[in-house]
Length: 238
Ligand SMILES: Nc1ncnc2c1ncn2[C@@H]1O[C@H](COP(=O)(O)OP(=O)(O)OP(=O)(O)O)[C@@H](O)[C@H]1O
Ligand SMILES: [Mg+2]
Image 1 (cartoon, rainbow, N blue to C red):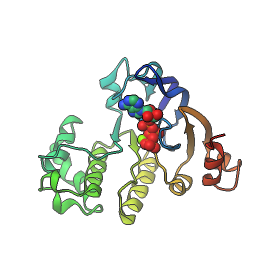
Image 2: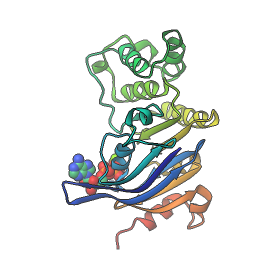
Image 3: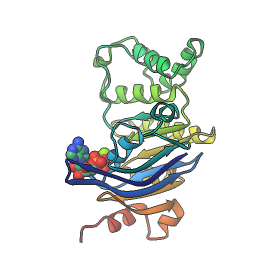
Image 4: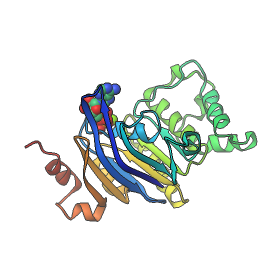
């Protein structure tokens, strides 16, 4: 579903943020992407989404090269960014309809699809208000609800648990699991290792732009006692 080959990103001709990484996410998987601050997670995700151009390497989404066929590739996924910065002046409804327009969700199907996520996230009563009146968590939940609206094949999230209350975080985890059970694929970054350990089918650990470990939770756990222990050991500065 997602294949990265020899992917490299250098900022300002000197900061090697992502260094020749290879990664495959299979259809139906929940894949966790973990690594210390500044390791290259967001940079990788922004290249996958086409927001940043790699210096070299290839990204295929469901077999489509995003650099060659960006529109086709972008039909395959939706994305929740690490910071919920969205259009401030429009209402929640306007935002969801805007996403519905872009992804050509038929008008008749929109209301039940809006409600499917905004009711459990408890933001449905706020959708008529401008987004600049939303709290951080409310914006985050609006972004997630919008990203799920087109029922994407690949659902990409950058640190989605940040700022969510426990009930909403639980709900998001259930949604991610359900998305995969229904044939979708999830790729997300997180610092919440306990969630990654319990939720993901496979995990990659990135450190200083390089993938230092990749495998199933069981395979990675074989290197130590807990994911936290393994993470701290593998990413320790010598
Ligand atoms: N726009 C930019 N210009 C220059 N350097 C950047 C830029 N964005 C990120 N970097 C650098 O690239 C490296 C990787 O950053 P990135 O944001 O991908 O890390 P991350 O793994 O997402 O970290 P975090 O866990 O803090 O979100 C860091 O060294 C960072 O300083
Ligand atoms: Mg980041």
